Length: 186
Image (cartoon, rainbow, N blue to C red; front, side):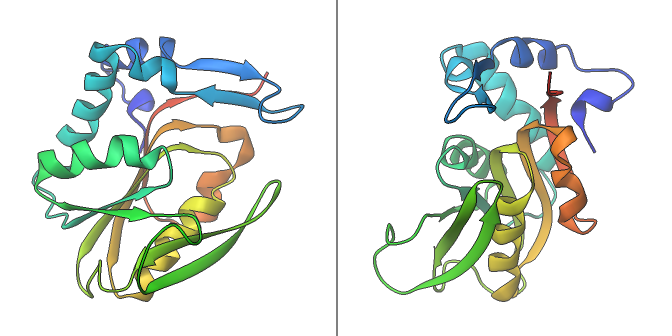
C-alpha cells in the first residue's frame, strides 16, 4: 500500500515530496541521493509526514516501532509516542552497549549489519519497521529478520520514500510496505 497510489491523494503528500531534495552523485557517482534533511527544515512538511504515519497505525495494536539507523531514528520515535508503542533502535555494529542480537545483510554497494538489544522486543509483540527510504530492500529485510528471530510479528514496514525501479518491495516476501512518496530514477 502506498499513500501516493490512493485514488483521492492526500494533499499533504505533494508538500512532503516537494521538500525532499535530490542530490546527484552522492555518496558516490551514479547515486541520486534522496535527502530528507530539507523535509526536516519545514515544520509543516515534517509534521504532515509523522501525522500520515500516525493516522495509519493508531489503533493497530502495535507494541514496537523499530527504527533503522540513522534516519529511522528521526521518524520512529514520534510515531511510537503518538501510537503508544515503545521505540527500539536498530543500530550499526558496536553502537549498543550490552548484549545484542545481530543480522548481516547485503547492500547494493557492500555488506552491513543491524543490531538490537537482547530483550528489547519480546515474542508475540507486534512491530512496525520504520526507515526513510526503501531502495533494494536489504536493510528492511534484515530488520524484519532480526525482529522475527526473537518472535515478534512484523505488521508492516513504513518508509517516507520508495525507489520502485530498484524493486526493494519485491524482496520483502509479501510483507506489507507503506510509503508516502516514490521517486523514479531519471
